View 1 (cartoon, rainbow, N blue to C red):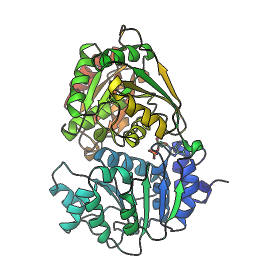
View 2: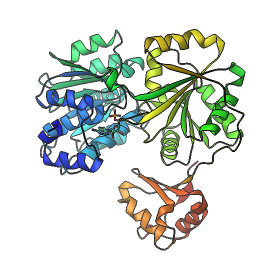
View 3: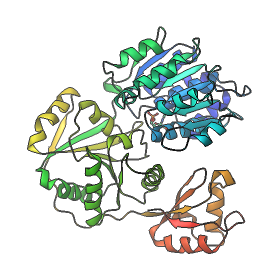
Length: 452
Ligand code: AMP
């Protein structure tokens, strides 16, 4: 019997639908303490299943009939907050009437304030915006029974220490606090000391819990990096996330890869939120094969079946290496990490290898790029979404019904509040576009455009 068997039937049902057979090590170790109401510090790498560990714990203890915010989850970035909320909603599918809302910065605060007049049971957000909403009196915390600090090390990296402490100071004293972190930098101790009471410590960073990643390294001059990358991508015919150390580099490299014929796009913090979301959706829908990203923007990225992560630039810090490569080989899959090392960065690369006791495989550069792999899908955007009660089935119906597209040519469908995205196989994409533009979806004409 696993710890899952002690959960409410509604949660067990969600676990079954999600296809989780066995609990992951962090779930097996942390859930019993979480369910018993203890504070917990869990050192767990990205991709270890920690969202479900705290999500199941919080949902088990939640009283859905009480309309008040009972759990607060703080995350380092908007993307991660969105993903955490998505994962929690999935786990809550069979628990009736659970409201889970996300509040993050970078968008107008007015509508968020308004939406809080109907409080969510679980609030997920970034520390700065949550603090603002508390200060405005919009977010009420008196019923909060659980605080989750997710990826606490990254929150500190991003300068959120003060905001986190300010939020903690406003929470009820009797609450439960759960802190998840992939690494344990010095400054986290102060946060842990003020947030947690007699925490149980769980360390899932051991050998067994490590994701199955092959760590490849190539020695290459700075000037040859992009062509070495292009050659490698063609040889492996794989989709990948490519990390660069600066935003400018991200733009440059994405542009160069596009010139070479790759379906590549940049992802960094200078971009509008909407463009960032759209890029992530396109990557998840496989209408982009290469995502060129900065560290901040790629936080929380959880794309299913991401086979490899590439460090076009050696990261400045060994922990960042771990966070980057943690995007592949999630939940027991295998993955590949490639790092391009110009001579001047060799000492840093060696320090990373040493620090994480990596078994490196130094490989030769591939042959120059030829037969650049094409993205299998194209993404269409429809300007209507959840607020108009549009569901994936409505879009699927419009495409396979009147438009006559084979169901197999339709890929992932992502529904947002005011927009939807649908992935269509390249060969059917124009037909789908024309059909959706001239026809109706759920009885109405909708604006349709290519997601770019
Ligand atoms: P996380 O570390 O929370 O980002 O989770 C990484 C991935 O593992 C997510 O895609 C989860 O859906 C998946 N996952 C979580 N728990 C399990 C489990 N018990 N079995 C299989 N996959 C899981």
